[in-house]
Figure 1 (tube, helix red, strand yellow):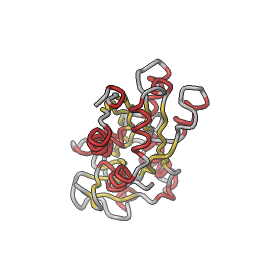
Figure 2 (figure 1 turned 120 degrees about the vertical axis):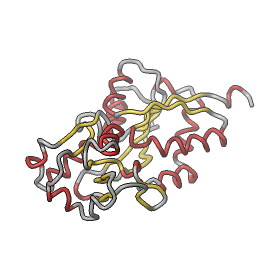
Figure 3 (figure 1 turned 30 degrees about the vertical axis):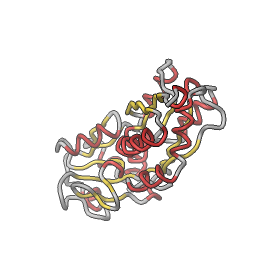
Length: 234
């Protein structure tokens, strides 16, 4: 394989998309010969790192606002932005049977701690605060909230039992049509703004064949099947 076909691409990946991109990366590397090197975190933190010169070539954001902002500020390859997934929010407990499928446990307010990601940097955290507001639970829950830096940490607070329940990305607890552990309420999409997750090629990736190949791959049927299997809409 010639060097031109064996580039590496450095990708900033929203924490909620960790499991899907790990699955996609295996096929991507096998099918294209390119290597994907991923970093995982909160979209807002990635924005700061990109502005400070971090070596990322592609951003897989947890929202559509951050890639659009980078585009306006001249930090992206024109025309490369697209929506690769629409995220789903879930209220989850590591305990079986703790969360009912209507989310009544939230309103019953019998828990000590509710985990959410930081609404300032993590779009799933923002969506969680919108749900609490829509359900008139903002005041009732404010002393119970445990804030994770990103959605991975919000998930960890629940999985370790430090919070009885929390708002997580459905993709963290779902595979092939079912909840993989504990109990969950899949939050209706009308309770928060759509979690449109956009991807964009950053300026550092403009001459990188692997960056272009990854974005094309994400639009293809193999990646789409993986993305859907984790509970995202397309």
